Image 1: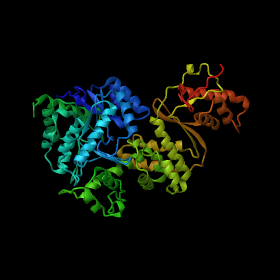
Image 2 (image 1 turned 90 degrees about the vertical axis):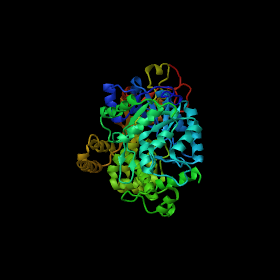
Image 3 (image 1 turned 45 degrees about the vertical axis):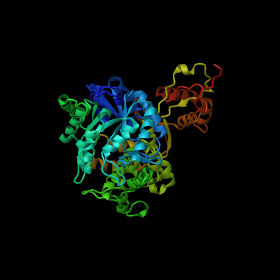
Image 4 (image 1 turned 60 degrees about the vertical axis):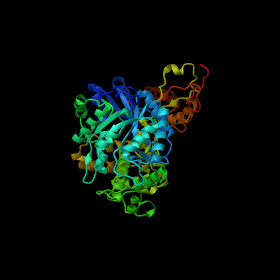
Length: 283
Length: 307
Protein backbone atom coordinates (compact mmCIF):
# COMPACT_ATOMS: atom_id res chain seq x y z
CA UNK A 1 0.00 0.00 0.00
CA UNK A 2 2.73 2.63 0.70
CA UNK A 3 3.77 2.63 -2.94
CA UNK A 4 0.62 3.57 -4.78
CA UNK A 5 -0.45 5.47 -7.86
CA UNK A 6 -0.86 8.63 -5.80
CA UNK A 7 2.83 8.79 -4.92
CA UNK A 8 3.87 7.43 -8.30
CA UNK A 9 4.61 3.96 -6.91
CA UNK A 10 7.52 5.18 -4.83
CA UNK A 11 8.61 3.86 -1.46
CA UNK A 12 9.98 6.92 0.28
CA UNK A 13 10.81 6.76 3.97
CA UNK A 14 11.22 9.60 6.44
CA UNK A 15 12.06 13.06 5.17
CA UNK A 16 12.25 16.61 6.44
CA UNK A 17 11.37 19.99 5.02
CA UNK A 18 14.27 21.72 3.26
CA UNK A 19 14.74 25.04 5.06
CA UNK A 20 17.28 27.85 4.52
CA UNK A 21 18.98 27.66 7.97
CA UNK A 22 20.04 24.09 7.15
CA UNK A 23 21.43 24.70 3.65
CA UNK A 24 25.06 25.00 4.75
CA UNK A 25 24.89 21.93 6.96
CA UNK A 26 23.30 19.80 4.26
CA UNK A 27 25.65 20.88 1.50
CA UNK A 28 28.83 20.67 3.57
CA UNK A 29 28.11 17.58 5.73
CA UNK A 30 25.90 15.70 3.28
CA UNK A 31 23.86 13.96 5.99
CA UNK A 32 21.95 10.83 5.10
CA UNK A 33 18.34 11.87 4.62
CA UNK A 34 15.85 9.79 2.70
CA UNK A 35 14.22 12.76 1.03
CA UNK A 36 13.50 16.47 1.33
CA UNK A 37 10.24 18.29 0.83
CA UNK A 38 10.50 21.77 -0.69
CA UNK A 39 7.97 24.57 -0.69
CA UNK A 40 7.39 24.88 -4.43
CA UNK A 41 6.71 28.62 -4.41
CA UNK A 42 10.15 29.36 -2.92
CA UNK A 43 11.74 28.01 -6.07
CA UNK A 44 9.30 29.21 -8.73
CA UNK A 45 11.61 32.09 -9.59
CA UNK A 46 13.84 33.15 -12.45
CA UNK A 47 17.22 32.20 -11.00
CA UNK A 48 19.74 33.10 -8.32
CA UNK A 49 20.79 31.44 -5.10
CA UNK A 50 17.59 29.51 -4.27
CA UNK A 51 17.68 27.59 -7.55
CA UNK A 52 21.44 27.13 -7.27
CA UNK A 53 20.98 25.55 -3.83
CA UNK A 54 18.11 23.42 -5.10
CA UNK A 55 20.21 22.11 -7.99
CA UNK A 56 22.95 21.08 -5.58
CA UNK A 57 20.42 19.34 -3.34
CA UNK A 58 18.94 17.55 -6.35
CA UNK A 59 22.34 16.14 -7.24
CA UNK A 60 22.38 14.18 -3.98
CA UNK A 61 18.86 13.85 -2.62
CA UNK A 62 15.32 12.99 -3.59
CA UNK A 63 12.99 15.96 -3.47
CA UNK A 64 9.20 16.17 -3.33
CA UNK A 65 7.32 19.38 -4.00
CA UNK A 66 4.76 20.80 -1.59
CA UNK A 67 2.82 23.93 -2.51
CA UNK A 68 1.17 26.55 -0.35
CA UNK A 69 -0.77 28.74 -2.75
CA UNK A 70 -2.49 26.75 -5.47
CA UNK A 71 -5.67 27.08 -3.42
CA UNK A 72 -7.53 24.14 -4.89
CA UNK A 73 -10.62 25.31 -3.00
CA UNK A 74 -10.76 28.88 -4.30
CA UNK A 75 -13.75 29.42 -6.54
CA UNK A 76 -11.67 31.00 -9.31
CA UNK A 77 -9.69 29.18 -11.98
CA UNK A 78 -5.99 28.36 -11.48
CA UNK A 79 -3.54 31.11 -12.35
CA UNK A 80 -1.88 30.18 -15.65
CA UNK A 81 1.47 31.74 -14.74
CA UNK A 82 1.45 29.81 -11.48
CA UNK A 83 0.77 26.57 -13.33
CA UNK A 84 3.46 27.23 -15.90
CA UNK A 85 6.09 27.94 -13.27
CA UNK A 86 4.98 24.94 -11.23
CA UNK A 87 5.40 22.68 -14.23
CA UNK A 88 8.86 24.12 -14.92
CA UNK A 89 9.83 23.26 -11.37
CA UNK A 90 8.37 19.76 -11.66
CA UNK A 91 10.61 19.19 -14.65
CA UNK A 92 13.59 20.42 -12.67
CA UNK A 93 12.99 18.40 -9.49
CA UNK A 94 11.44 15.33 -11.13
CA UNK A 95 9.17 15.15 -8.10
CA UNK A 96 7.28 11.84 -8.17
CA UNK A 97 4.15 13.54 -6.85
CA UNK A 98 3.26 16.98 -5.60
CA UNK A 99 0.97 18.21 -2.91
CA UNK A 100 -0.91 21.32 -1.90
CA UNK A 101 -3.63 22.11 0.59
CA UNK A 102 -7.34 21.47 0.70
CA UNK A 103 -8.18 25.08 1.36
CA UNK A 104 -8.80 28.41 -0.32
CA UNK A 105 -6.88 31.67 -0.08
CA UNK A 106 -7.42 33.81 -3.15
CA UNK A 107 -10.44 35.67 -4.46
CA UNK A 108 -10.64 37.49 -7.79
CA UNK A 109 -6.87 37.42 -8.17
CA UNK A 110 -6.20 38.74 -4.67
CA UNK A 111 -4.13 36.50 -2.41
CA UNK A 112 -4.40 36.24 1.37
CA UNK A 113 -1.33 33.98 1.59
CA UNK A 114 -3.15 31.94 4.21
CA UNK A 115 -4.70 28.47 4.22
CA UNK A 116 -8.33 29.37 4.78
CA UNK A 117 -10.74 26.58 5.72
CA UNK A 118 -13.26 25.28 3.21
CA UNK A 119 -16.99 25.30 3.67
CA UNK A 120 -17.81 21.59 3.58
CA UNK A 121 -20.45 21.71 0.87
CA UNK A 122 -21.08 19.55 -2.20
CA UNK A 123 -20.65 22.57 -4.45
CA UNK A 124 -17.24 23.30 -2.92
CA UNK A 125 -16.22 19.64 -3.29
CA UNK A 126 -17.20 19.70 -6.96
CA UNK A 127 -15.31 22.92 -7.70
CA UNK A 128 -12.25 21.81 -5.74
CA UNK A 129 -12.09 18.40 -7.41
CA UNK A 130 -12.32 20.01 -10.86
CA UNK A 131 -9.40 22.26 -10.04
CA UNK A 132 -7.28 19.41 -8.69
CA UNK A 133 -7.87 17.50 -11.93
CA UNK A 134 -6.97 20.57 -13.97
CA UNK A 135 -3.72 21.06 -12.08
CA UNK A 136 -2.81 17.38 -12.27
CA UNK A 137 -3.50 17.25 -16.00
CA UNK A 138 -1.31 20.31 -16.54
CA UNK A 139 1.69 19.33 -14.42
CA UNK A 140 1.45 15.65 -15.36
CA UNK A 141 2.38 14.19 -11.98
CA UNK A 142 0.07 12.73 -9.32
CA UNK A 143 -1.38 15.30 -6.94
CA UNK A 144 -2.11 14.80 -3.24
CA UNK A 145 -4.23 17.19 -1.19
CA UNK A 146 -3.41 17.99 2.41
CA UNK A 147 -5.98 18.52 5.15
CA UNK A 148 -5.32 21.86 6.89
CA UNK A 149 -5.51 23.01 10.49
CA UNK A 150 -8.46 25.30 11.00
CA UNK A 151 -9.77 27.75 13.54
CA UNK A 152 -13.20 28.43 12.06
CA UNK A 153 -16.18 26.50 10.69
CA UNK A 154 -18.98 27.79 8.49
CA UNK A 155 -22.73 27.68 8.97
CA UNK A 156 -23.17 26.50 5.38
CA UNK A 157 -21.21 23.25 5.83
CA UNK A 158 -23.20 20.16 4.89
CA UNK A 159 -20.80 17.45 6.13
CA UNK A 160 -17.82 16.81 8.38
CA UNK A 161 -14.30 17.70 7.33
CA UNK A 162 -13.34 14.07 6.69
CA UNK A 163 -16.51 13.51 4.66
CA UNK A 164 -15.58 16.56 2.62
CA UNK A 165 -12.03 15.31 2.12
CA UNK A 166 -13.36 11.95 0.96
CA UNK A 167 -15.85 13.61 -1.37
CA UNK A 168 -13.11 15.72 -2.96
CA UNK A 169 -10.51 12.96 -3.41
CA UNK A 170 -13.05 10.54 -4.85
CA UNK A 171 -14.32 13.13 -7.32
CA UNK A 172 -10.79 14.20 -8.25
CA UNK A 173 -9.40 10.68 -8.05
CA UNK A 174 -6.35 12.09 -6.31
CA UNK A 175 -4.15 11.22 -3.36
CA UNK A 176 -4.15 12.47 0.22
CA UNK A 177 -1.32 14.06 2.11
CA UNK A 178 -2.57 13.18 5.56
CA UNK A 179 -1.34 15.71 8.11
CA UNK A 180 -1.94 14.04 11.46
CA UNK A 181 -0.90 17.14 13.39
CA UNK A 182 -3.49 19.18 11.50
CA UNK A 183 -6.12 16.58 12.36
CA UNK A 184 -5.14 16.86 16.02
CA UNK A 185 -5.18 20.68 15.97
CA UNK A 186 -8.57 20.86 14.23
CA UNK A 187 -10.04 18.14 16.45
CA UNK A 188 -9.20 20.22 19.51
CA UNK A 189 -10.43 23.44 17.94
CA UNK A 190 -13.69 21.93 16.72
CA UNK A 191 -14.31 19.21 19.29
CA UNK A 192 -14.33 16.13 17.09
CA UNK A 193 -12.64 12.77 17.57
CA UNK A 194 -9.33 12.71 15.71
CA UNK A 195 -9.33 8.91 15.48
CA UNK A 196 -12.73 8.95 13.79
CA UNK A 197 -11.16 11.24 11.18
CA UNK A 198 -8.13 8.97 10.68
CA UNK A 199 -10.34 5.87 10.47
CA UNK A 200 -12.62 7.48 7.90
CA UNK A 201 -10.00 8.45 5.37
CA UNK A 202 -9.56 6.08 2.40
CA UNK A 203 -6.24 4.52 3.36
CA UNK A 204 -5.43 3.43 -0.17
CA UNK A 205 -5.30 7.06 -1.26
CA UNK A 206 -2.73 8.19 1.30
CA UNK A 207 0.34 9.22 -0.66
CA UNK A 208 2.24 10.89 2.17
CA UNK A 209 1.95 11.79 5.86
CA UNK A 210 2.93 15.03 7.60
CA UNK A 211 3.87 15.29 11.25
CA UNK A 212 4.62 18.55 13.08
CA UNK A 213 4.42 20.46 16.34
CA UNK A 214 1.98 23.20 17.30
CA UNK A 215 1.33 25.87 19.94
CA UNK A 216 -1.40 25.80 22.56
CA UNK A 217 -3.23 28.95 23.52
CA UNK A 218 -5.88 29.37 26.15
CA UNK A 219 -8.86 28.90 23.86
CA UNK A 220 -7.43 27.25 20.77
CA UNK A 221 -4.41 25.51 19.23
CA UNK A 222 -2.40 27.11 16.46
CA UNK A 223 -0.52 25.12 13.83
CA UNK A 224 2.86 26.81 14.20
CA UNK A 225 5.35 24.08 13.20
CA UNK A 226 7.74 25.33 15.85
CA UNK A 227 7.81 22.50 18.39
CA UNK A 228 8.53 18.78 18.56
CA UNK A 229 5.68 16.40 17.79
CA UNK A 230 3.58 15.67 20.88
CA UNK A 231 2.62 12.15 21.99
CA UNK A 232 -1.07 12.35 20.99
CA UNK A 233 0.02 13.26 17.45
CA UNK A 234 2.43 10.30 17.38
CA UNK A 235 -0.51 8.11 18.42
CA UNK A 236 -2.49 9.40 15.46
CA UNK A 237 0.50 8.75 13.26
CA UNK A 238 0.68 5.20 14.56
CA UNK A 239 -2.96 4.66 13.68
CA UNK A 240 -2.51 6.22 10.23
CA UNK A 241 0.33 3.88 9.32
CA UNK A 242 -1.56 0.90 10.75
CA UNK A 243 -4.15 1.68 8.12
CA UNK A 244 -2.04 2.96 5.25
CA UNK A 245 1.18 1.04 5.71
CA UNK A 246 4.68 2.47 5.82
CA UNK A 247 3.95 5.66 3.97
CA UNK A 248 6.36 8.46 3.03
CA UNK A 249 6.52 10.59 6.19
CA UNK A 250 7.70 14.14 6.56
CA UNK A 251 8.36 16.34 9.59
CA UNK A 252 7.55 20.04 9.12
CA UNK A 253 9.47 22.55 11.25
CA UNK A 254 9.09 26.09 9.92
CA UNK A 255 9.59 28.50 12.81
CA UNK A 256 12.17 28.74 15.61
CA UNK A 257 14.03 26.17 13.55
CA UNK A 258 16.60 24.24 15.60
CA UNK A 259 19.74 22.56 14.26
CA UNK A 260 19.50 20.18 11.35
CA UNK A 261 20.36 17.27 13.63
CA UNK A 262 17.58 18.12 16.07
CA UNK A 263 15.00 18.34 13.29
CA UNK A 264 16.19 15.14 11.66
CA UNK A 265 16.28 13.26 14.99
CA UNK A 266 12.71 14.35 15.67
CA UNK A 267 11.63 13.06 12.26
CA UNK A 268 13.40 9.76 12.76
CA UNK A 269 11.30 9.07 15.86
CA UNK A 270 8.74 7.94 13.31
CA UNK A 271 10.90 4.83 12.86
CA UNK A 272 9.80 3.61 16.29
CA UNK A 273 6.23 3.45 15.08
CA UNK A 274 7.08 2.13 11.66
CA UNK A 275 9.01 -0.75 13.21
CA UNK A 276 6.18 -1.71 15.54
CA UNK A 277 3.29 -1.22 13.22
CA UNK A 278 1.71 -4.02 11.27
CA UNK A 279 -0.48 -3.06 8.40
CA UNK A 280 -4.13 -3.78 9.09
CA UNK A 281 -5.60 -5.27 5.98
CA UNK A 282 -9.02 -4.17 4.79
CA UNK A 283 -9.75 -1.73 7.62
CA UNK B 1 -24.74 30.32 -0.11
CA UNK B 2 -22.49 29.83 -3.14
CA UNK B 3 -18.78 29.20 -2.68
CA UNK B 4 -17.67 32.30 -4.57
CA UNK B 5 -19.92 34.61 -2.54
CA UNK B 6 -18.82 33.11 0.76
CA UNK B 7 -15.15 33.42 -0.13
CA UNK B 8 -15.56 37.04 -1.23
CA UNK B 9 -17.31 37.91 2.00
CA UNK B 10 -14.80 36.13 4.25
CA UNK B 11 -11.78 37.47 2.35
CA UNK B 12 -13.09 41.03 2.78
CA UNK B 13 -13.21 40.49 6.52
CA UNK B 14 -9.85 38.74 6.70
CA UNK B 15 -8.20 41.61 4.84
CA UNK B 16 -9.90 44.30 6.94
CA UNK B 17 -7.21 46.42 8.65
CA UNK B 18 -6.39 45.78 12.30
CA UNK B 19 -6.69 48.39 15.03
CA UNK B 20 -3.67 50.19 16.49
CA UNK B 21 -3.27 47.45 19.10
CA UNK B 22 -3.32 44.79 16.39
CA UNK B 23 -6.82 43.48 17.03
CA UNK B 24 -9.80 43.11 14.72
CA UNK B 25 -11.80 46.32 14.60
CA UNK B 26 -15.39 46.65 15.76
CA UNK B 27 -16.48 47.66 12.27
CA UNK B 28 -16.40 45.16 9.45
CA UNK B 29 -16.71 45.54 5.68
CA UNK B 30 -19.17 48.22 4.65
CA UNK B 31 -19.17 49.72 8.14
CA UNK B 32 -21.30 46.91 9.52
CA UNK B 33 -20.61 45.54 13.01
CA UNK B 34 -17.83 42.97 12.62
CA UNK B 35 -19.47 40.75 15.24
CA UNK B 36 -22.67 40.61 13.20
CA UNK B 37 -20.74 40.16 9.96
CA UNK B 38 -18.66 37.27 11.36
CA UNK B 39 -21.69 35.58 12.92
CA UNK B 40 -23.39 35.47 9.51
CA UNK B 41 -20.72 33.12 8.13
CA UNK B 42 -18.76 31.56 10.98
CA UNK B 43 -19.98 29.24 13.70
CA UNK B 44 -19.05 30.07 17.29
CA UNK B 45 -18.07 27.35 19.76
CA UNK B 46 -18.11 27.24 23.56
CA UNK B 47 -14.72 28.99 23.77
CA UNK B 48 -14.64 31.41 20.86
CA UNK B 49 -17.23 33.69 19.32
CA UNK B 50 -17.54 33.97 15.54
CA UNK B 51 -15.75 37.31 15.82
CA UNK B 52 -12.84 35.74 17.73
CA UNK B 53 -12.49 32.92 15.24
CA UNK B 54 -12.42 35.38 12.37
CA UNK B 55 -9.91 37.49 14.28
CA UNK B 56 -7.37 34.64 14.22
CA UNK B 57 -7.33 34.80 10.42
CA UNK B 58 -7.53 38.59 10.29
CA UNK B 59 -4.43 38.92 12.48
CA UNK B 60 -2.55 36.15 10.67
CA UNK B 61 -3.12 37.92 7.38
CA UNK B 62 -1.76 41.27 8.53
CA UNK B 63 1.12 39.83 10.53
CA UNK B 64 2.19 37.87 7.46
CA UNK B 65 2.04 40.74 4.97
CA UNK B 66 3.57 43.27 7.40
CA UNK B 67 6.36 40.78 8.07
CA UNK B 68 7.03 40.38 4.37
CA UNK B 69 7.09 44.14 3.76
CA UNK B 70 9.43 44.75 6.72
CA UNK B 71 11.75 42.04 5.47
CA UNK B 72 11.82 43.41 1.92
CA UNK B 73 12.07 47.13 2.75
CA UNK B 74 14.21 47.50 5.91
CA UNK B 75 15.82 50.67 4.53
CA UNK B 76 12.51 52.40 3.87
CA UNK B 77 11.34 51.28 7.32
CA UNK B 78 14.43 52.87 8.85
CA UNK B 79 13.85 56.13 6.98
CA UNK B 80 10.15 56.41 7.80
CA UNK B 81 10.25 54.95 11.28
CA UNK B 82 8.47 51.79 12.34
CA UNK B 83 5.06 53.28 13.01
CA UNK B 84 4.81 55.35 9.84
CA UNK B 85 6.14 52.45 7.80
CA UNK B 86 3.42 50.18 9.20
CA UNK B 87 0.75 52.79 8.50
CA UNK B 88 2.07 53.23 4.98
CA UNK B 89 2.10 49.46 4.41
CA UNK B 90 -1.48 49.18 5.65
CA UNK B 91 -2.62 51.86 3.19
CA UNK B 92 -0.60 50.33 0.37
CA UNK B 93 -1.87 46.81 0.95
CA UNK B 94 -5.48 47.97 1.25
CA UNK B 95 -5.18 49.48 -2.22
CA UNK B 96 -2.70 47.00 -3.70
CA UNK B 97 -3.23 43.61 -2.07
CA UNK B 98 -1.10 40.72 -3.28
CA UNK B 99 -1.93 39.64 -6.80
CA UNK B 100 0.70 36.95 -6.92
CA UNK B 101 1.00 33.38 -5.68
CA UNK B 102 4.22 34.42 -3.97
CA UNK B 103 4.85 37.02 -1.26
CA UNK B 104 8.08 37.80 -3.10
CA UNK B 105 6.07 40.13 -5.35
CA UNK B 106 4.21 41.93 -2.56
CA UNK B 107 6.21 45.14 -2.94
CA UNK B 108 6.24 45.17 -6.73
CA UNK B 109 3.77 48.05 -6.95
CA UNK B 110 5.05 50.05 -3.98
CA UNK B 111 7.04 52.65 -5.91
CA UNK B 112 4.17 53.34 -8.31
CA UNK B 113 1.73 53.55 -5.41
CA UNK B 114 4.00 55.96 -3.52
CA UNK B 115 4.21 58.16 -6.63
CA UNK B 116 0.44 58.51 -6.36
CA UNK B 117 0.56 58.90 -2.57
CA UNK B 118 3.77 60.86 -1.84
CA UNK B 119 2.40 62.35 1.39
CA UNK B 120 3.49 59.14 3.18
CA UNK B 121 7.09 60.19 2.63
CA UNK B 122 6.75 63.72 4.06
CA UNK B 123 10.06 65.62 3.87
CA UNK B 124 12.03 62.53 2.87
CA UNK B 125 10.48 62.03 -0.52
CA UNK B 126 13.59 61.88 -2.71
CA UNK B 127 15.56 59.77 -0.24
CA UNK B 128 12.65 57.39 0.32
CA UNK B 129 11.97 56.93 -3.40
CA UNK B 130 15.62 56.12 -3.96
CA UNK B 131 15.46 53.55 -1.18
CA UNK B 132 12.29 51.90 -2.49
CA UNK B 133 13.82 51.58 -5.93
CA UNK B 134 17.05 50.15 -4.54
CA UNK B 135 15.30 47.64 -2.29
CA UNK B 136 13.08 46.42 -5.09
CA UNK B 137 16.10 46.20 -7.41
CA UNK B 138 17.80 44.12 -4.74
CA UNK B 139 14.94 41.61 -4.80
CA UNK B 140 15.02 41.43 -8.60
CA UNK B 141 18.79 41.00 -8.65
CA UNK B 142 18.67 38.26 -6.01
CA UNK B 143 16.44 35.81 -7.84
CA UNK B 144 15.85 37.34 -11.28
CA UNK B 145 16.36 35.29 -14.38
CA UNK B 146 19.89 34.71 -15.67
CA UNK B 147 20.42 33.95 -19.35
CA UNK B 148 23.45 32.02 -20.62
CA UNK B 149 26.45 34.34 -20.49
CA UNK B 150 27.89 35.80 -23.69
CA UNK B 151 30.99 33.95 -24.90
CA UNK B 152 33.76 35.19 -27.16
CA UNK B 153 32.66 32.79 -29.90
CA UNK B 154 29.21 34.41 -29.91
CA UNK B 155 30.89 37.51 -31.35
CA UNK B 156 32.71 35.88 -34.24
CA UNK B 157 31.81 37.46 -37.55
CA UNK B 158 29.85 40.29 -36.03
CA UNK B 159 30.34 43.96 -36.80
CA UNK B 160 31.23 45.73 -33.56
CA UNK B 161 29.43 48.93 -34.47
CA UNK B 162 26.18 47.11 -35.23
CA UNK B 163 26.42 44.67 -32.37
CA UNK B 164 23.46 44.74 -30.00
CA UNK B 165 24.21 43.27 -26.62
CA UNK B 166 21.58 42.05 -24.22
CA UNK B 167 22.07 42.88 -20.56
CA UNK B 168 21.19 40.09 -18.10
CA UNK B 169 17.59 40.42 -16.85
CA UNK B 170 18.71 40.32 -13.21
CA UNK B 171 21.09 43.29 -13.64
CA UNK B 172 19.34 46.40 -12.31
CA UNK B 173 20.37 49.94 -13.31
CA UNK B 174 19.53 52.81 -10.99
CA UNK B 175 20.08 56.54 -11.16
CA UNK B 176 19.81 57.81 -7.59
CA UNK B 177 19.94 61.15 -5.81
CA UNK B 178 21.30 59.88 -2.48
CA UNK B 179 23.95 57.30 -1.58
CA UNK B 180 21.24 54.91 -0.40
CA UNK B 181 23.48 51.94 -1.14
CA UNK B 182 25.55 52.99 1.90
CA UNK B 183 22.40 53.47 3.92
CA UNK B 184 20.91 50.09 3.17
CA UNK B 185 24.18 48.37 4.01
CA UNK B 186 24.21 50.17 7.37
CA UNK B 187 20.66 49.10 8.09
CA UNK B 188 21.40 45.49 7.24
CA UNK B 189 24.56 45.36 9.32
CA UNK B 190 22.47 45.15 12.45
CA UNK B 191 19.96 42.73 11.00
CA UNK B 192 22.63 40.15 10.28
CA UNK B 193 23.40 37.98 13.25
CA UNK B 194 21.59 40.18 15.77
CA UNK B 195 20.22 37.96 18.50
CA UNK B 196 17.05 38.65 20.40
CA UNK B 197 18.79 40.09 23.46
CA UNK B 198 20.65 42.69 21.48
CA UNK B 199 17.73 43.81 19.32
CA UNK B 200 17.08 47.01 21.27
CA UNK B 201 20.70 48.08 21.10
CA UNK B 202 20.91 47.16 17.45
CA UNK B 203 17.76 49.16 16.76
CA UNK B 204 19.20 52.26 18.45
CA UNK B 205 22.49 51.89 16.59
CA UNK B 206 20.58 51.53 13.35
CA UNK B 207 18.67 54.77 13.92
CA UNK B 208 21.88 56.63 14.71
CA UNK B 209 23.42 55.38 11.49
CA UNK B 210 20.29 56.07 9.48
CA UNK B 211 20.12 59.62 10.79
CA UNK B 212 23.79 60.13 9.98
CA UNK B 213 23.55 58.82 6.45
CA UNK B 214 20.17 60.40 5.90
CA UNK B 215 21.63 63.77 6.81
CA UNK B 216 24.18 63.55 4.04
CA UNK B 217 23.95 66.00 1.23
CA UNK B 218 22.23 64.64 -1.86
CA UNK B 219 24.72 63.08 -4.21
CA UNK B 220 23.85 61.75 -7.61
CA UNK B 221 25.02 58.17 -8.02
CA UNK B 222 24.71 55.65 -10.81
CA UNK B 223 24.34 52.15 -9.48
CA UNK B 224 24.24 48.63 -10.81
CA UNK B 225 22.62 46.04 -8.57
CA UNK B 226 23.89 42.67 -9.72
CA UNK B 227 24.99 39.34 -8.38
CA UNK B 228 28.21 37.36 -8.26
CA UNK B 229 28.24 33.76 -7.09
CA UNK B 230 24.58 34.13 -6.15
CA UNK B 231 25.15 37.08 -3.79
CA UNK B 232 23.85 40.56 -4.55
CA UNK B 233 26.33 43.42 -4.89
CA UNK B 234 26.07 47.15 -5.51
CA UNK B 235 28.52 48.70 -7.95
CA UNK B 236 28.71 52.43 -8.55
CA UNK B 237 29.37 53.53 -12.11
CA UNK B 238 30.48 56.70 -13.80
CA UNK B 239 27.77 58.53 -15.69
CA UNK B 240 29.18 57.46 -19.07
CA UNK B 241 29.24 53.77 -18.06
CA UNK B 242 25.72 53.93 -16.72
CA UNK B 243 24.45 55.61 -19.89
CA UNK B 244 26.17 53.02 -22.06
CA UNK B 245 24.52 50.17 -20.21
CA UNK B 246 21.13 51.83 -20.12
CA UNK B 247 21.20 52.46 -23.86
CA UNK B 248 22.37 48.92 -24.58
CA UNK B 249 19.51 47.59 -22.47
CA UNK B 250 17.12 49.73 -24.52
CA UNK B 251 18.21 47.73 -27.57
CA UNK B 252 20.53 50.15 -29.31
CA UNK B 253 23.71 48.97 -30.99
CA UNK B 254 27.09 49.46 -29.35
CA UNK B 255 27.90 52.14 -31.91
CA UNK B 256 24.76 54.10 -31.04
CA UNK B 257 25.30 53.61 -27.31
CA UNK B 258 28.86 54.91 -27.42
CA UNK B 259 27.76 57.94 -29.41
CA UNK B 260 25.08 58.82 -26.88
CA UNK B 261 27.05 57.92 -23.73
CA UNK B 262 29.74 60.51 -24.29
CA UNK B 263 27.48 63.45 -25.10
CA UNK B 264 28.67 66.24 -22.84
CA UNK B 265 31.36 64.02 -21.32
CA UNK B 266 34.52 65.67 -20.04
CA UNK B 267 36.54 62.58 -20.91
CA UNK B 268 38.99 63.46 -23.70
CA UNK B 269 38.09 61.81 -26.97
CA UNK B 270 41.51 60.23 -27.18
CA UNK B 271 40.87 58.29 -23.98
CA UNK B 272 37.40 57.09 -24.85
CA UNK B 273 38.38 54.00 -26.85
CA UNK B 274 40.44 52.53 -24.04
CA UNK B 275 37.84 53.53 -21.49
CA UNK B 276 35.04 51.76 -23.36
CA UNK B 277 37.21 48.69 -23.85
CA UNK B 278 37.96 48.45 -20.13
CA UNK B 279 34.26 48.86 -19.32
CA UNK B 280 33.25 46.04 -21.62
CA UNK B 281 36.00 43.79 -20.32
CA UNK B 282 34.81 44.31 -16.76
CA UNK B 283 31.15 43.84 -17.57
CA UNK B 284 31.80 40.74 -19.63
CA UNK B 285 33.89 39.30 -16.79
CA UNK B 286 30.99 39.96 -14.42
CA UNK B 287 28.68 38.08 -16.77
CA UNK B 288 26.38 41.02 -17.40
CA UNK B 289 25.81 40.21 -21.07
CA UNK B 290 23.68 37.34 -22.36
CA UNK B 291 24.17 35.16 -25.37
CA UNK B 292 22.21 36.33 -28.40
CA UNK B 293 19.07 34.40 -29.14
CA UNK B 294 18.81 33.42 -32.76
CA UNK B 295 15.89 34.90 -34.63
CA UNK B 296 14.71 36.87 -31.65
CA UNK B 297 13.18 40.30 -31.81
CA UNK B 298 13.55 43.61 -30.05
CA UNK B 299 16.89 44.04 -28.37
CA UNK B 300 17.66 40.34 -28.43
CA UNK B 301 19.69 40.34 -31.58
CA UNK B 302 23.04 40.64 -33.16
CA UNK B 303 23.11 42.16 -36.58
CA UNK B 304 25.41 40.22 -38.82
CA UNK B 305 27.67 42.60 -40.66
CA UNK B 306 31.04 42.80 -42.22
CA UNK B 307 33.88 41.09 -40.41
